[in-house]
Image 1 (cartoon, rainbow, N blue to C red):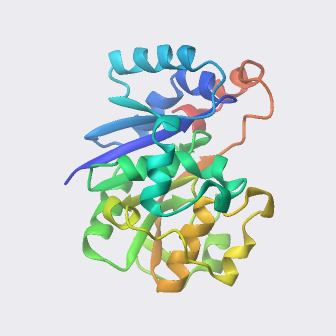
Image 2: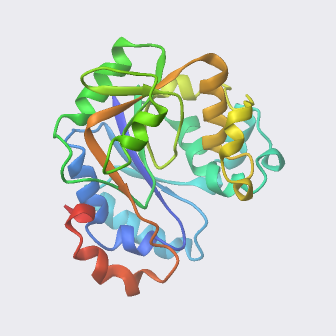
Length: 254
């Protein structure tokens, strides 16, 4: 069994993620020895400066490699039979994930958006449970941690539950664990009426297309009960103005 960890950076968050211990602590919170630890770099103003920081992280063994998304975007779109125009504004929210899946060589892929973090209350074996679920249940296509402090909102979407999971249909690009082979297929041109709940401004983005694929085919996602992830949008202001706040929030950095 092989598995990759990945996260992504762009212009408004790369300094926070690459110049602090945030990425190192996120990987540590997964409590797993990854075959690859990948950084996706997209939409940055000074690529040379970002690559310098990425090289430092490779040297310090925080990550094993990085990908300049722009170098592979056209090949990924061609492989998945998607045009940039069909994505609309969703292109900017989706291309890093599509490039990653196109290039991925490991059996499983664990993805976190740059502004997501594993909560410190999560059990150490959450990822192990998720992998075993994908191994045993082919109808389950996505594993994710809880996204709420309370399980009430999750129960509203639940179809059924087991001791370890809530089962439902849905998808978020904030955090997911998937079988790579499933997501390397040409699955991104499905449509489903309920998927129209995704924000209109984001166009026909990756997570909306995955949601449609799941719903049309009656595939499931399994939400793990023994862990939670935290999503905080910290890109509205320069990272230096918010860094002191984040460093004092142990849920985000430990």
